[in-house]
Length: 442
Ligand code: PA5
Image 1 (cartoon, protein in one colour):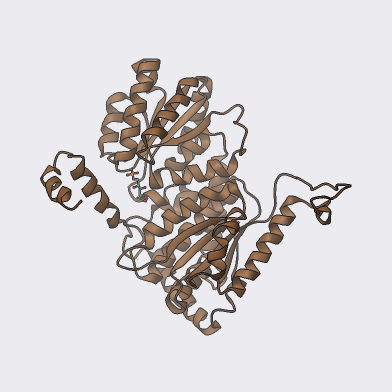
Image 2 (cartoon, helix red, strand yellow):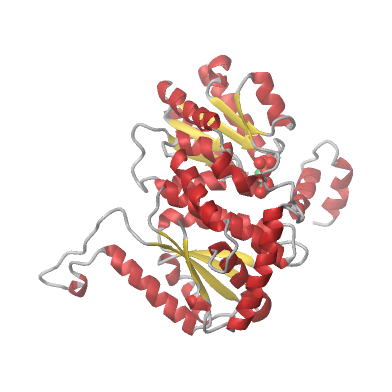
């Protein structure tokens, strides 16, 4: 479960203003609950934690077991945006930072960029390992994953033969439409459906997240259960509801205190991709119609030595939301040293996590003194259940927050602009008539 703190905003806001924004968040909560707002055909994510059928969970676990039996050592998850960030976040958070997993395949990601070197180097790895692919695209037409999949499909077919390659490919896409659906049906790939009423960035608890996370060896039942418990808590319309508090305060800071940037702050490298997932969720949901809070992130304490100066003393445009993890699941205690040449004996006997916690607290006070309001989202520890909870918390708060802001959280019309230019420049059929006009501009 998530707990939420707002005390780091007290010096910056008036309680009456906060109460007014809680009222706005209540109204937005009603709109989201009653499904009366813009984008209300994309609200399937709300009930995923409690309504995911056992048969679907089992099917995700069957992929894991089948590939284990086949001796698969490497799984390449191909997807971009909402079709990879949730799984990447969960797997990075749950995995050992340095040692490859035993008993489960290594899970890596492709199709989220168009770097030739990245693909070539990933192919180098695939050649050393027994490889399988999960290709994810809701629309089934996105260029980056389509390019990566074409390359990996060819590689798997050449390496294992066409029938065996088909058994090493799982496609996750729309139930009926899109090039990937057509391809998967024709080639006989095992296929999972991205529900029509769940947008990419809200899809981590659909097969988009569940299949890769299960294949990596993590407990998707606990993930869903954690999200379901969080959902129960967030269903209550009250001023204690953490999603309502977060939505109210970030809108207040933005609209009344001139804060245009929100920084998600983590203090554990395992959570770096939680910030990437969050940035997409809030950036694509709120950044439209000339509105929105720009979502940024820092990974502390590393970034205290790079971005810390700006946050402390630069333009006063930001507030911070810190992701606090209460417990470390590993122990590393700093020893005593007879000579004490490094002058660290004052820390002898302390856990490294204690130093991290003091750095976090010291930073909170310094940033508040420097004019940066701070909120805090806490989880007890990094595990499947808590990740499920924090995913659901941020999704629910995002829906409420965007409705307070007055935008439709569930569309992303702006992402088409670059695609049109790129397609014209690549002379994609149907776009060639725009190529000359674009070339004249560059
Ligand atoms: O949130 C979204 O809808 C987008 O970011 C998509 O996830 C992203 O563009 C990938 O789309 P698709 O899954 O259709 O390939």
